[in-house]
Image (cartoon, rainbow, N blue to C red):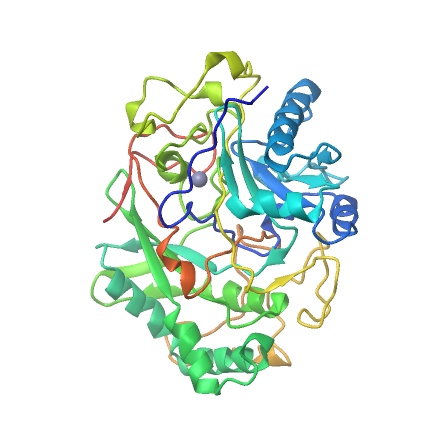
Length: 433
Ligand SMILES: [Zn+2]
């Protein structure tokens, strides 16, 4: 049925990165039993996936069509046919807000070869459907937060403003402790390890249609302890980042793109549709390819958009597209939600309202934040922080330090087709540079 569909080629530098605000973002709202079941399968036999633009739905006809389309592509990609395509399952209880409904699908029962085949590309964008494939793992994000408020798009100055906070005595001591306890840096001279982490700090600035700038702040995690990471990030998200030269960066609430689910851009700045040869829709335009407006030339950088009406499914109620990032770096910290591993002392999986980041100022490694230095700045108060970031999380991550930095930059096409609902920002924006 999809034999003549070819996926979008992997662009130079890879597909854009899908940023998550927490290690378990993609499991947010998901039934714990779903996660438990999926994680109980043998290694190498499952993959997780987001369908670009898919939003949780109980419209069975629609879900069957999604399932059938996923199945058709997976059969073609892997050459296998004995597997299950599992839709997301809502946790029982009060229905969460739309943005917190689960969207992740799973494929179970693949051979290790089939799993590897799906993962080697990561993003499979076909005219009929776009799949973002992830390994069954949960990793600590490199995305820390997004700031707004800087008046110029000067990454060096923005970076310096972030660094100013990271280099406060208390903060530095905190980072030293995390790095010192991280198995990733075992055997490293501590100063070198800390420097490595500090050097991984990276800024990606985007410009909104109204001219304002927003910047993603990305940094390799100094720890593999999920709870510690959450405390640390919650604290960072509670701070203000002053440059005393181009204004002050204020942390924005994390809102996932309805298409790719990344928290790194508002929907109209989703970099996926700007990928050369992108076959999928734009955020908010439906799951199936035929939802895409054919009259928007900016969406079709190339001829690649082969949309042969004959193999396009009639679109049901819209959906969104999802995003995905291409590669994930397996060197990155990753843990299984079901396992309360050593690194994550006591970390409780899925859903169980996770350790609220924060407040416990107490012992162990986390201790550190005390209030610190500097008068006015409210010192390191414990995290708390706000909405948006809280307990759930996703695994996103991927760009490691080192390697992938280059990619994942937001592309920017213009045009304000705003996506569905959330995250829309006024106007068209573009990536700078
Ligand atoms: Zn997106």
